[in-house]
Amino acid sequence: MVFISLFCLCCVFFLALHHSFTLFASGRGKVIGRKWADAKNAKEVLALVQAEGWASSVVHAKADQKHVNAPCFYQGNCSLHGENLLGRCFCFPGWTGEQCEVDERQSTPVCTNRGDTCFYTDEAGVFAISLERWHVAQEAELVTWDNWDPVASGGDRINDHLLGFDLYREVGEIGANLGNFLEVGCGPWTQSVTMMKTRAFDVEKYVLLEPGALNYAANTKDTVYASGQIDGFDGKTVVVNAGGEHLDLFLEVFDTIMMVNVLEHTNNAISILRGLYNALKPGGLLIMNERWLDTFDPPEELDLNALYHPIRMKQTVFDHFISVGFDIIRDCRTAECHNADIVKNYGTSTYFIGRKKESCA
Ligand SMILES: C[S@@+](CC[C@H](N)C(=O)[O-])C[C@H]1O[C@@H](n2cnc3c(N)ncnc32)[C@H](O)[C@@H]1O
Image (tube, rainbow, N blue to C red; front, side):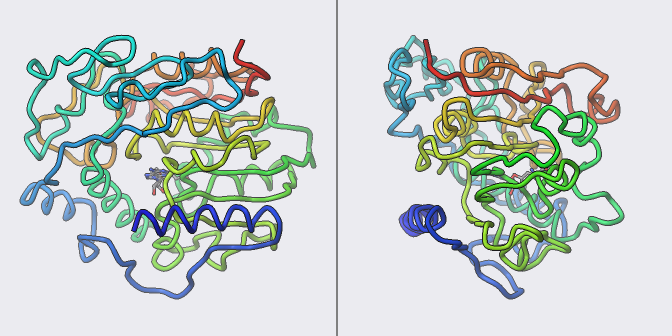
């Protein structure tokens, strides 16, 4: 399964850059691999999880944690007990030290199989989870969007983000070409389509990397790439049904990358941040909105909010990523760019636009 998706991903990308090629499966129906596809809503998924648990607390480190063209960063893999982000190791629970070489597992909580405490680290919060835990969160996510009315709801907070990014003015002049463009974790309706329309942007390639893409195309209402192409970007759109953890295949190929409200849903968020850095060309533009949770205690037993959001990273991870890797264009963390209700319920985030530094020095 993993082999097939990696293989497809490589092929798709190389073909995509040379031809107008799209990986896509059409038609409606259940997508193979969903464990609880008959659940009608996230509450039903939660009930199934509470009955069954998710069976594993094993978190896997990425074997190769290099940073492209960044010799001044530590290039190792944090002893495979953590994730290297721009030269700093963030260690998995039970490991400490500069390169996560110190074993302190005796003092870490044991996994209950129904809670997230065993994934929690004091330094970074929860930044990586087991694959089984990710599948549980993803099931709730897919079932939610499959039953969503995007017209009545305005998609997934599209207007909030439009305002948070100040109508995307700082991304470029009206009509600018964003080059090879990627949106990670784009959901069914994307945020980029609104940005492209609002600013009349063009692109060379329009790549969407989304692990639920095939499901959304088959089961979700008004998925904007249901035909395999985005309206107005025919022949340029490439839809890849995979998670951001596979970004490490793309080395310095994108001029612009967008990611909005994704990390808290993923399997290994720090590996995704590293992947974003590596996938951007030097001087490439990152448009990102993600939240942090410094005071969130991971619950022993899952509630609905925790079910959807297994990753709960602390602000320090974002501060490190932004300050070391990027020249900042926008980093709005205050009320002026945030919907007050969302802040009250979900904590603080940044509306960030920045250029990848030309070198790591
Ligand atoms: C809250 S939705 C946001 C969708 C979209 N970014 C938006 O703002 O409209 C989170 C999305 O993250 C996707 N996701 C979950 N795990 C992911 C991963 N490992 N890599 C990339 N995307 C992931 C989910 O499938 C879901 O579509």
